[in-house]
Image (cartoon, rainbow, N blue to C red; front, side, top):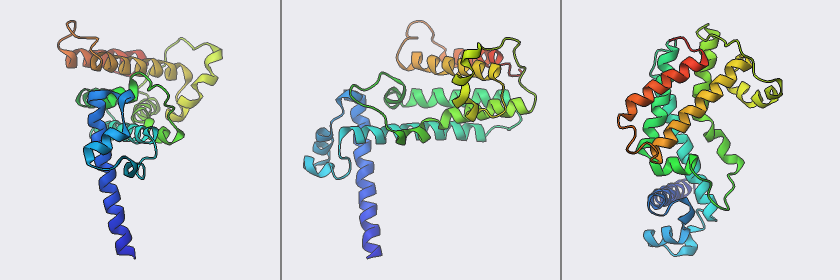
Length: 230
């Protein structure tokens, strides 16, 4: 019974992987809005009713792709940070940012699913949250570690008092960091992902050619914005 169940589980895992691989290819040709369980089943040579045993709806398949994508970019950023000397906070910031960009450039259609236009009619469930914060959790940990080590110079300006409550979720990512640094970090993260969006979605075409160098310079400007020691 146990061996039989294990074999069935392996088959199911393999078929699930095949379905998601085909769906990722479909993202590249049809976009997230055009994702179709019937089309995936047709490519696999399955009757359309069979695929619903693995993904009951298109939204379930989208959710699986989104979780996979967030986990993939999160793992890339985590590994990049782990490979750095942990007391070199500027290097960790730069390396983590480059990991975000490199993953996005290598996987533009998956990145578009995560950070592009919302898919009409789709609402991401709570299941996506843990994966969604993996990459920004690394960025938050870098700032928190740098603050604890005295490597961040707090700016003199304070955020408006009405933003105190708005920073609550970010305090969990940057424990012990004051709000004036948290808001500068939020601005830096927005600039980081804004840059990557511009590159992935073609906004830099015919304007910036050496994008890696330009991105690195921008990451250093963001670090200066946060008060991270250069």
